[in-house]
Amino acid sequence: MRAPAIERSLTAGPAEGPVDPFPLRLSGPVIKGFGRGSKELQIPTANIPIEGLRVGSCETVESGVYYGYAGLDIPATAGNDNDNHGNKKSSTTVAAADGRVFPMVMSIGWNPFYKNSVRSVEVHIIHTFPEDFYGVQMNLVILGFIRPEFDYVSKEALIEDIKMDIKVGVNSLEREGYRDFKSDSYLTNFGC
Image (cartoon, rainbow, N blue to C red):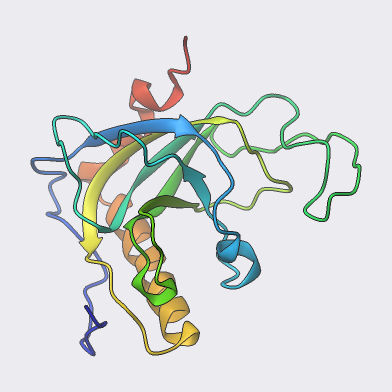
């Protein structure tokens, strides 16, 4: 599906809060993705495995862009022993705002612009981290759907839409019916 040339709303979902099937909960370890988020798009993502994707009571999840909160089990030191170029680096502390819970927007799908042959879950956490944190457990509370996935005529058009998705996600989460989910205990339950 090609991206429509229409004006988009600055929020998604009803103002009073999520409606069925939301909230959805999903978790998994942060894994290496295609490497395009940070390098090509300048919009880093934390990916989790798609295998066995079952969110809440939903057997299948529609491909598209969603918003909600991400909880990260970030230890005092995070990341791997090598930087993005394979060079040895020293451990540094990852600073986390509000503990370990952050607003996020995420894509579940095939990324038609890149013609992926596998479906992926790519989460853009709305926070700047000083280093990668592969292997860290990430818990997601998905509160709403922003839009279906589209194909794009250019990388610039894709980036423009992703930036709009981020605005929509942030604006949507600022509403009273969504703010309380930031303290959902699922987000920080990293037990066995």
